[in-house]
Each structure stands twice: as structure tokens, then as C-alpha cells.
Image (cartoon, rainbow over all chains, first blue to last red; front, side):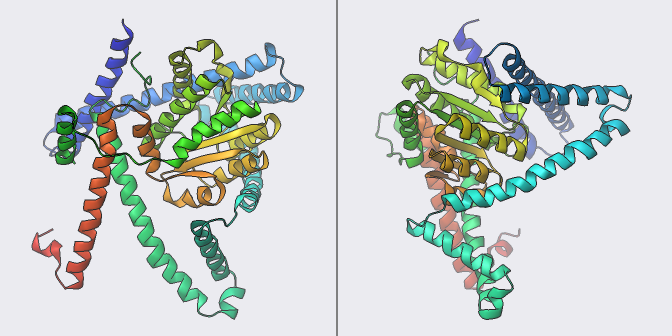
Length: 218
Length: 242
């Protein structure tokens, strides 16, 4: 199969399926065949996404295997890969140890008592990093950044008890900024993004959106 | 939309001049960032955010993949190291295919390193791992395009600490503040969709940007008309019986 044909088949499939989903949206409920085919295609979509997930896990396993066995990685990387394999195999073993699989009590126990607390700890740490990141990077060097800075100061003072206590007008002013300026800008942005996504969908429909395919025809 | 697109198709067919496409500073900055990576010998780090495909936000992932392809081709052409960091496994095969293809198209398939398309872990912990990787390996430029949540500040902070140039954006308006305060160049919401059209050489794709702007002008016009009508006490919805 030539490269051009290989490229055209997925483009054609994407275009046809996109057109079908569009027609289905506007089809009356009495067109049951169209709606049932759409349901079937949605299931296929979920299956393909699931397959990609498996493929992604395979790439991950391959990466850590190579890090351990082949490449001259540092000892920290090798330790990281060992921890990865230990956790991967532990979760796999526990998951398959009971007929209930991931709904089983054992799996839920390690999920709730190991995965969730570790995740929460990382999350808490990460929020400090977020504040640190903002503090490190934010500089007022333009009118736009000055507006962001001013908005942030007003918002923070409005939330702190000390703000409305010393400046009583701050609370109504902050509410006005949030409900008027903020909402207006947000809706403008949302409409612009919606139109842009619509255009991207249109490019997909006519087979011109090749983001997931190769860049050029050569 | 159909009328305006038909009009531009007619112009393309008759070799009439097309509207000038606006430049995106963030898109040009990617090229500068790759140049910086070549000069410093450090990597270009690409992060697509919560790159999901089976979701209503998939269009952002598609736009991110377009930017990845553009960045990968530039890196391949100029000999810069590109590392793709994912925090979701769903997009890994897609990214690997795109980067490999970019190296092939640039005539340097031997420069492609599969290990540079990496999964760092899910969510916040993945971002922490990416930040740590940037700190240890060094980073010349950070390109962040896709679906982002609060954790993007971790990476932007890490890039500032590594003295890297940061370019990024998302179509999620709620996270634009993070890029506004922390990135050197930003894709302002729908700009990330426009970027894919700009990097293509297809006049039809480029003309869709003009169509987009015309629809925006019509939307603004309709909003103003609606505002005037409602101020005058005319409820248009009642007239057309909505």
C-alpha cells in the first residue's frame, strides 16, 4: 500500500464519521437506525481509546525496562524504574487476585491506603509549588500584566477579612469586577474558542485537519 | 460560515489574493526557542497537558499535536533535542508517531529517540516529575500547549528556575491567568487552534482563519444589535417565537 493511500484512508474515515455524527445530532428521534449506529460508533471510540491506553502502558514499560537493562542510566533513574515495576506488579497482582478485580476489597484497600494518601501528599506539595511558580515568574512589565496584578490584589484583599474591614467599598467593587468585567471577558473568550473549535471541526470534516497524521505528502 | 468559506474557495480557484494572516508571536517564539536549544545544547521540552482524546476537550489535544509536529520538525531540522513529556498514557502512541514522522520528513530518522517521548506519571505527580527532570537535565525552552489545570504553574515555575524560555497557552479561559503571569509568550485561547492553520502551507486552511474572524465580527455585531434591542425594550426572542 502506497504512503499516499495509507494517509488517505484515515483522513476519509475521520471525515465520514465526523459527517455522520453531525447528521445524527440533527436527525429526528424517529431515525432509529442513525441513532443506534452512532451509539455503536461511540462504543468503538471508547474501545480504540482503551487500546491506545494499553499501547501507552506498553511504551511506559518499555521505557523503564530499557532504563534498567540497556542504557547507562544514573542510579536514581534505576531506583525509580525498580519502584515503578514493584508498584506496577503489586497493583496487577492484587487486581487479579480476586474475581472482583479492581472492585475487590484488596485492590480498594491498596488504592485507598497507598495510592490516595501518596497522591494527596503530592497534591499538597504541588500547590506550594504553584504559588512559588507564580511568585518566581510574575513581573509587571506591560499594561496587561499590570491589569492582572491589580485584579489579583483586589481579589485577594476582597477575600481576606482585613480588606473589607479597612476598605468597605472593596467587597461591592470586587463583586462588580467578578460579575461584570470578568463575565463579559469570559463570554467573549468562550465564544471565540467555540468558533475556533467549530472551524477545526470543519477542517476535520473536509479532511484538511491532519494534526494526527503525517505533516506533508512527501 | 459556508458562504464565507465558499467565497474564499472561489478566490483560491481564481488566483485572487487571500487576506493576510496575522502573525502569532508565540508561534515565531517556538522557532527562537529551538534556536536557543541548539545554542545552549539543552533540550526543548514539550508538554501537552492533560492530553485526552476521548473527551469533549479533544480539540485542544489535536491543536497541541499540531504544535508538537511543528516543534518536532524544527528540532529535527536544526538538530535540537526534543523531549515530549506526557502526564497521560492515552496520547503517547500518537505523540511518538508524530515525532518519528517529523524526523523522517526532515530526512533525519536516525536522530529520533523513542525514549524522548516519555510518560512522567499522572496529574500533579507527573508535573512534579517533569519539573524535576527539567531541573536535572537543563532546559532551553518549554512549549506547553493543550489542556491545562492549576498544575501548569509547577512547570512554568520550574522553567523560570532553569532559565528556560516558556511558550504556552490553553483554550481553557480559567487557566489563561497562569500563562499570562508566567509564560514568556502565550497562545491566547483560540490562538492555539489558529497555530495549526498558520503552520500549514494550504491556502484553504489559511482562509479558514479569515472565516473564523468574519464569524467573530458577525457574533460581535449580533451582540451589539441584541444589546440595543433589549435596551429599547424589544425582545427579539418573543418576535421569532423562541
